[in-house]
Image 1: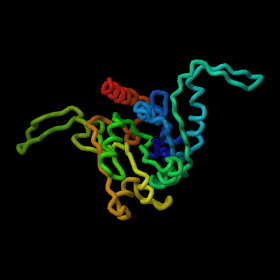
Image 2: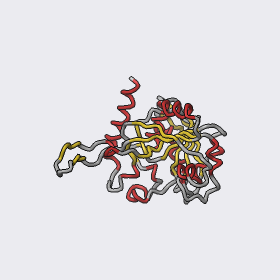
Image 3: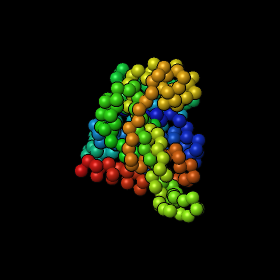
Image 4: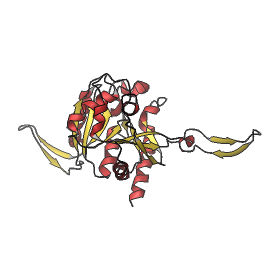
Length: 263
Protein backbone atom coordinates (compact mmCIF):
# COMPACT_ATOMS: atom_id res chain seq x y z
CA UNK A 1 0.00 0.00 0.00
CA UNK A 2 1.30 3.46 -0.91
CA UNK A 3 1.68 6.32 1.56
CA UNK A 4 0.88 9.77 0.13
CA UNK A 5 2.50 12.74 1.88
CA UNK A 6 1.32 16.31 1.30
CA UNK A 7 4.47 18.42 1.11
CA UNK A 8 3.78 21.15 -1.44
CA UNK A 9 2.99 24.13 0.77
CA UNK A 10 5.16 27.14 1.44
CA UNK A 11 4.48 27.44 5.17
CA UNK A 12 3.93 31.16 5.70
CA UNK A 13 3.52 30.73 9.47
CA UNK A 14 7.10 29.48 9.71
CA UNK A 15 8.59 32.04 7.37
CA UNK A 16 11.90 32.19 9.22
CA UNK A 17 12.41 28.49 8.51
CA UNK A 18 10.60 28.06 5.20
CA UNK A 19 11.57 31.11 3.15
CA UNK A 20 14.61 29.29 1.73
CA UNK A 21 12.98 25.85 1.48
CA UNK A 22 9.64 24.00 1.41
CA UNK A 23 7.92 23.86 4.79
CA UNK A 24 8.28 20.06 5.19
CA UNK A 25 12.02 20.33 4.60
CA UNK A 26 12.46 22.26 7.86
CA UNK A 27 14.69 20.09 10.01
CA UNK A 28 14.15 18.47 13.39
CA UNK A 29 17.30 16.94 14.81
CA UNK A 30 19.16 17.33 11.49
CA UNK A 31 16.45 15.49 9.56
CA UNK A 32 13.59 16.98 7.51
CA UNK A 33 10.10 16.47 8.87
CA UNK A 34 9.04 13.85 6.24
CA UNK A 35 11.94 11.63 7.30
CA UNK A 36 10.42 11.32 10.79
CA UNK A 37 6.97 10.66 9.30
CA UNK A 38 8.31 8.02 6.93
CA UNK A 39 10.14 6.31 9.79
CA UNK A 40 6.79 5.85 11.53
CA UNK A 41 5.17 4.28 8.47
CA UNK A 42 8.24 2.15 7.81
CA UNK A 43 8.08 0.84 11.36
CA UNK A 44 4.71 -0.69 10.43
CA UNK A 45 5.93 -2.10 7.13
CA UNK A 46 4.91 0.64 4.70
CA UNK A 47 7.90 1.63 2.59
CA UNK A 48 6.45 3.04 -0.64
CA UNK A 49 5.82 6.77 -0.60
CA UNK A 50 4.38 9.39 -2.93
CA UNK A 51 5.32 12.93 -1.96
CA UNK A 52 3.43 15.89 -3.41
CA UNK A 53 6.10 18.44 -4.23
CA UNK A 54 5.09 22.05 -4.91
CA UNK A 55 6.90 25.09 -3.58
CA UNK A 56 10.60 24.68 -4.44
CA UNK A 57 9.93 21.09 -5.43
CA UNK A 58 13.49 20.59 -6.62
CA UNK A 59 14.73 20.66 -3.01
CA UNK A 60 12.55 17.68 -2.08
CA UNK A 61 13.72 15.77 -5.16
CA UNK A 62 17.36 16.58 -4.51
CA UNK A 63 17.12 15.48 -0.88
CA UNK A 64 15.81 12.02 -1.73
CA UNK A 65 18.12 11.74 -4.72
CA UNK A 66 21.11 12.22 -2.43
CA UNK A 67 19.69 10.75 0.80
CA UNK A 68 21.29 7.34 0.27
CA UNK A 69 24.71 8.96 -0.03
CA UNK A 70 24.30 10.81 3.26
CA UNK A 71 23.64 7.56 5.12
CA UNK A 72 26.66 5.50 4.13
CA UNK A 73 30.41 5.56 3.84
CA UNK A 74 31.60 5.86 0.26
CA UNK A 75 34.75 5.79 -1.82
CA UNK A 76 34.79 8.08 -4.85
CA UNK A 77 37.01 7.41 -7.84
CA UNK A 78 37.61 10.82 -9.34
CA UNK A 79 39.07 9.33 -12.53
CA UNK A 80 36.21 6.97 -13.39
CA UNK A 81 33.44 9.00 -11.70
CA UNK A 82 32.33 5.90 -9.83
CA UNK A 83 31.28 5.53 -6.22
CA UNK A 84 31.65 2.46 -4.01
CA UNK A 85 29.28 2.29 -1.06
CA UNK A 86 30.37 0.94 2.33
CA UNK A 87 28.31 0.24 5.45
CA UNK A 88 25.03 1.17 3.83
CA UNK A 89 22.52 2.18 6.53
CA UNK A 90 19.73 3.32 4.22
CA UNK A 91 16.06 2.46 4.67
CA UNK A 92 14.22 0.22 2.20
CA UNK A 93 12.12 3.07 0.87
CA UNK A 94 10.80 3.71 -2.62
CA UNK A 95 9.94 7.39 -3.00
CA UNK A 96 8.04 9.09 -5.83
CA UNK A 97 8.20 12.90 -5.87
CA UNK A 98 5.14 14.12 -7.77
CA UNK A 99 5.04 17.70 -8.99
CA UNK A 100 1.68 19.11 -7.88
CA UNK A 101 2.14 22.84 -8.50
CA UNK A 102 3.23 25.68 -6.26
CA UNK A 103 -0.25 27.14 -5.66
CA UNK A 104 -2.42 24.01 -5.80
CA UNK A 105 -4.94 23.51 -2.98
CA UNK A 106 -4.89 20.38 -0.83
CA UNK A 107 -7.59 18.52 -2.71
CA UNK A 108 -5.84 19.24 -5.99
CA UNK A 109 -2.56 17.85 -4.67
CA UNK A 110 -4.30 14.64 -3.63
CA UNK A 111 -5.86 14.42 -7.08
CA UNK A 112 -2.49 14.84 -8.79
CA UNK A 113 -1.08 11.93 -6.81
CA UNK A 114 -3.80 9.62 -8.12
CA UNK A 115 -1.68 8.09 -10.94
CA UNK A 116 0.89 6.93 -8.40
CA UNK A 117 -1.36 5.05 -5.93
CA UNK A 118 -2.19 2.43 -8.58
CA UNK A 119 -5.97 2.53 -8.10
CA UNK A 120 -5.63 0.98 -4.65
CA UNK A 121 -6.54 2.13 -1.11
CA UNK A 122 -3.83 4.42 0.21
CA UNK A 123 -2.60 6.07 3.36
CA UNK A 124 -2.38 9.86 3.46
CA UNK A 125 -0.79 12.37 5.81
CA UNK A 126 0.41 15.96 5.98
CA UNK A 127 4.13 16.62 5.65
CA UNK A 128 4.40 18.70 8.82
CA UNK A 129 3.01 16.48 11.60
CA UNK A 130 4.43 13.60 13.63
CA UNK A 131 2.29 11.53 15.97
CA UNK A 132 2.37 8.26 17.86
CA UNK A 133 -0.18 6.49 15.66
CA UNK A 134 -0.52 2.71 15.37
CA UNK A 135 -0.75 2.53 11.57
CA UNK A 136 -1.65 -1.17 11.57
CA UNK A 137 -4.58 -0.51 13.91
CA UNK A 138 -5.66 2.42 11.73
CA UNK A 139 -5.67 0.21 8.62
CA UNK A 140 -7.64 -2.54 10.39
CA UNK A 141 -10.14 -0.02 11.75
CA UNK A 142 -10.66 1.48 8.31
CA UNK A 143 -11.19 -1.86 6.61
CA UNK A 144 -13.72 -2.95 9.21
CA UNK A 145 -15.67 0.31 8.87
CA UNK A 146 -16.43 -0.02 5.18
CA UNK A 147 -16.14 3.76 4.77
CA UNK A 148 -14.31 5.55 1.98
CA UNK A 149 -12.17 7.62 4.34
CA UNK A 150 -10.86 7.38 7.89
CA UNK A 151 -9.06 10.10 9.84
CA UNK A 152 -7.13 9.80 13.07
CA UNK A 153 -8.30 11.96 15.98
CA UNK A 154 -5.56 12.89 18.46
CA UNK A 155 -5.03 15.13 21.43
CA UNK A 156 -2.22 17.66 20.90
CA UNK A 157 0.51 18.26 23.42
CA UNK A 158 -0.76 20.57 26.16
CA UNK A 159 0.44 24.17 26.13
CA UNK A 160 -1.09 25.58 29.31
CA UNK A 161 -2.11 24.49 32.77
CA UNK A 162 -5.86 23.89 32.95
CA UNK A 163 -8.21 24.88 35.78
CA UNK A 164 -11.53 23.36 36.81
CA UNK A 165 -13.55 26.19 38.39
CA UNK A 166 -16.78 25.66 40.36
CA UNK A 167 -19.85 27.90 40.47
CA UNK A 168 -18.44 29.78 43.48
CA UNK A 169 -15.35 30.72 41.46
CA UNK A 170 -13.24 28.33 43.46
CA UNK A 171 -10.52 26.22 41.85
CA UNK A 172 -11.52 22.57 42.11
CA UNK A 173 -8.63 21.08 40.23
CA UNK A 174 -5.45 22.06 38.41
CA UNK A 175 -3.93 19.96 35.63
CA UNK A 176 -0.47 20.73 34.34
CA UNK A 177 -0.72 20.95 30.54
CA UNK A 178 -3.31 18.23 29.90
CA UNK A 179 -3.35 16.68 26.44
CA UNK A 180 -5.37 18.84 24.10
CA UNK A 181 -6.98 20.65 27.02
CA UNK A 182 -9.55 17.86 26.79
CA UNK A 183 -10.24 18.40 23.08
CA UNK A 184 -9.61 16.31 19.97
CA UNK A 185 -8.20 17.47 16.65
CA UNK A 186 -7.58 16.06 13.21
CA UNK A 187 -4.32 14.18 13.68
CA UNK A 188 -3.55 14.23 9.97
CA UNK A 189 -3.21 10.46 9.46
CA UNK A 190 -5.76 9.09 6.99
CA UNK A 191 -6.63 5.98 5.06
CA UNK A 192 -8.68 6.37 1.91
CA UNK A 193 -10.29 4.30 -0.78
CA UNK A 194 -9.65 5.25 -4.42
CA UNK A 195 -13.30 6.33 -4.62
CA UNK A 196 -12.35 9.60 -2.88
CA UNK A 197 -10.92 10.77 -6.20
CA UNK A 198 -14.50 10.87 -7.51
CA UNK A 199 -15.09 13.78 -5.14
CA UNK A 200 -12.39 16.00 -6.68
CA UNK A 201 -12.65 18.24 -9.72
CA UNK A 202 -9.22 19.34 -10.93
CA UNK A 203 -7.14 21.82 -8.98
CA UNK A 204 -9.67 24.58 -8.36
CA UNK A 205 -10.81 23.25 -4.99
CA UNK A 206 -11.39 25.63 -2.11
CA UNK A 207 -11.73 22.88 0.49
CA UNK A 208 -9.32 20.75 2.42
CA UNK A 209 -9.32 17.10 1.44
CA UNK A 210 -11.69 16.16 4.29
CA UNK A 211 -13.97 19.12 3.66
CA UNK A 212 -14.11 17.94 0.08
CA UNK A 213 -15.32 14.49 1.15
CA UNK A 214 -17.90 15.90 3.57
CA UNK A 215 -19.03 19.03 1.75
CA UNK A 216 -21.98 19.65 -0.57
CA UNK A 217 -20.37 17.67 -3.42
CA UNK A 218 -19.78 14.59 -1.30
CA UNK A 219 -23.04 12.79 -2.15
CA UNK A 220 -23.29 11.31 1.33
CA UNK A 221 -19.63 10.35 1.79
CA UNK A 222 -18.66 10.75 5.46
CA UNK A 223 -15.30 9.82 7.00
CA UNK A 224 -15.14 7.96 10.27
CA UNK A 225 -12.47 8.58 12.86
CA UNK A 226 -9.93 6.42 14.64
CA UNK A 227 -9.09 7.96 18.02
CA UNK A 228 -5.62 7.79 19.51
CA UNK A 229 -5.30 9.07 23.07
CA UNK A 230 -1.66 10.02 22.69
CA UNK A 231 0.07 13.31 21.87
CA UNK A 232 0.93 14.74 18.48
CA UNK A 233 3.51 17.30 17.43
CA UNK A 234 2.41 19.44 14.49
CA UNK A 235 5.10 21.71 13.16
CA UNK A 236 2.69 24.07 11.45
CA UNK A 237 1.37 25.18 14.82
CA UNK A 238 4.68 26.42 16.20
CA UNK A 239 4.93 29.86 14.56
CA UNK A 240 6.55 31.51 17.55
CA UNK A 241 9.67 29.33 17.44
CA UNK A 242 12.77 30.78 15.84
CA UNK A 243 14.29 27.32 15.63
CA UNK A 244 12.73 23.87 15.22
CA UNK A 245 15.61 22.21 16.99
CA UNK A 246 13.78 22.42 20.33
CA UNK A 247 11.13 20.06 18.97
CA UNK A 248 13.59 17.18 18.83
CA UNK A 249 12.85 16.11 22.40
CA UNK A 250 9.11 16.07 21.70
CA UNK A 251 9.60 13.93 18.61
CA UNK A 252 11.93 11.57 20.47
CA UNK A 253 9.33 11.19 23.21
CA UNK A 254 6.65 10.27 20.68
CA UNK A 255 8.87 7.68 19.03
CA UNK A 256 9.87 6.24 22.43
CA UNK A 257 6.16 5.72 23.17
CA UNK A 258 5.77 3.88 19.87
CA UNK A 259 8.71 1.59 20.63
CA UNK A 260 7.34 0.91 24.13
CA UNK A 261 3.99 -0.18 22.65
CA UNK A 262 5.76 -2.72 20.45
CA UNK A 263 8.05 -4.15 23.10
